[in-house]
Image 1: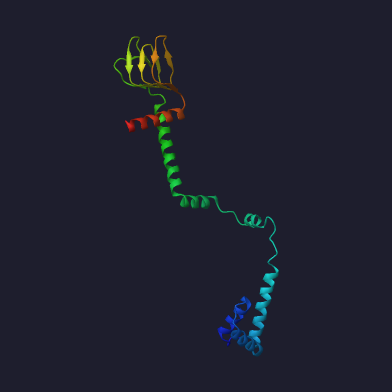
Image 2 (image 1 turned 135 degrees about the vertical axis):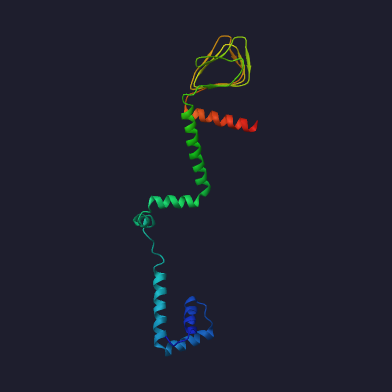
Length: 202
């Protein structure tokens, strides 16, 4: 068979595919009658095709795929994470940005933890760690008090925000905007984000 032409092998495959012409079939039959090696090879091809056709109705067990996958060695967690990072660069950058932002905000929160500060206004009074809106006075604008209290005896035309403190309203006190008390880090973080966005658009 080693000395036979490749054309004979092609004829064999065309015959098995059902795509051989009459003239080619005559040549193939004549060659198979005279060449024992090609005849044996052709017989083996026919046996293989018959085996494949007879096995086509056989189905794999129900959990075959999952069982094979479970039997494979587990991928190291580090390799899996590295692959995920390579395939999701945008998500990786966003996660890194959020991590750094939260670390920065946490650091700011720690620094703000005991520092008394408030919105400066000439009509406000300060008694120890308490900002006072005096009776009969009107403050135009928002007031923010950090790590202290506020006592409103007059009027505030704006929002009042107290971070890590308390507010006290006198009977005559009045606030036209929102009053908010923040005593947790996430509340403070939300306030800082809102303030930053408001300043950005103003």
